[in-house]
Picture 1 (cartoon, rainbow, N blue to C red):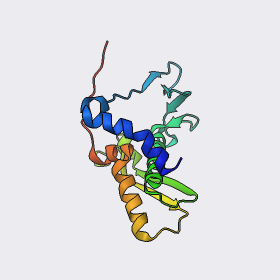
Picture 2: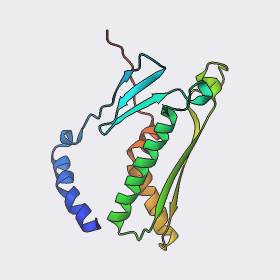
Picture 3: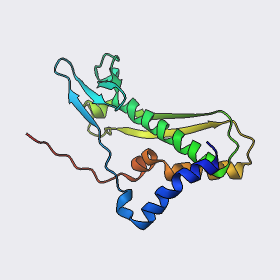
Length: 168
């Protein structure tokens, strides 16, 4: 898809959202069921069933998906799609590109071994490897806009309001 095609596809959506802001509000959902045989959760992805379990550093077998890995994978996927959409809109000459995310965890926090150890990632690093002859100024713009419009990046960065509830 080129910039013209992308803009043509998005133009009616942008116009509708300008006219009625409420039409832009969408609730995304994820659903999983707790496995009754092991410490795992079966997550419906819309395309397949993903089974998440404990990371080996917390006693898991390594056979199930780690939720931390899934978070990084979601970041890579979102950042990659956003980068490609922004590059297309900017008519940025981009050859091959890869996206990598890595994060540091201290599993003492997760296992309750040390109260001063955080539960969750201490740091996350997102890196793009770009095959492009574009000037650095355009690369900087590409990255700035990718960061601005990547839903997963902004969600992690801005910390949304979270609520937890249980139904019986």
